Image 1 (tube, rainbow, N blue to C red):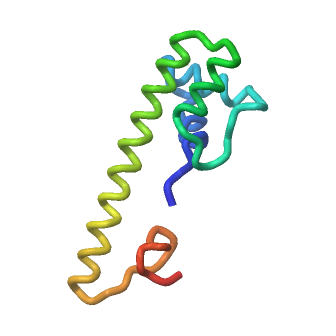
Image 2 (cartoon, rainbow, N blue to C red):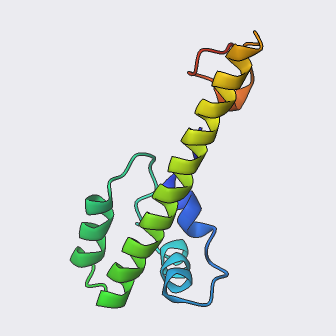
Length: 104
């Protein structure tokens, strides 16, 4: 299963850029939305309602795009692995393959 966006964002706290600053701010904010499956618009609206500066909103867009690219690549790789396993007659199992036809 892919990592939740908020977990990905919080993992960026060590960066020396606006994304790192947003991540550190989110880590300090007890109200930062952390549940899985939040949309970009929900997070952007959270920033707007809390009077975030434009650089924070821009950083959210940047890190959201990074996160989307990573998840796209992960889904593509998982599909390729499943197809390769099918070709050799193996059914993949384990956490990465749950919900993809394997058993675990």
